[in-house]
Length: 226
Image (cartoon, rainbow, N blue to C red):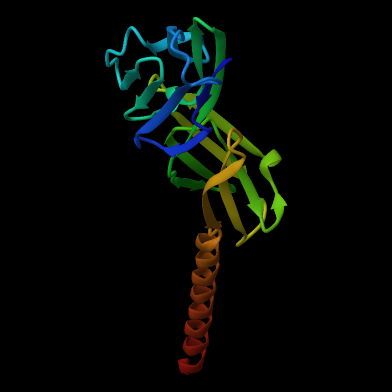
């Protein structure tokens, strides 16, 4: 009886090399008649990355084959396109079998507050390696349903996410957080304090000073008249 044992699901970081092992396992290790006829690593899209007969380096992938024992796949610089399911397929003199594993990438991400326009505040995530969404909160209250989202997918597989929230209150603190469904986690967060009323408060204060000054001048003029 023959089987293949593969590396457990991997969670790694962008541009940090990942190595996936596919080991051939025999119930009788001393079986001299056993022979591998085909052993390959395949991406979930049924695209063959390498095999026992073709270990040439292609793009950022490299493979090493140890006859009748294992095929090792290395992803040198993982990027968004490399996320997903990997399958090791075996055909041998003792039968066919396969096993699969999964690759997930976690990449540090930054949220920028790009502008405050009247009652609207906007957060932006650029060149994200995840297809995520920006969620909005005031304390523990989720305000995401009151926001708008714009998502753009670039040619290199990265994402830009822009989200705006309409604010109808004064001096309120908000939080925008970047949620990634694939890993079910928030990977970036930013606290925002709305200060869009500062200008109007300043204008009101200056207007009051001007009114007081005019009153004082009028009173002084009345007192000095004969």
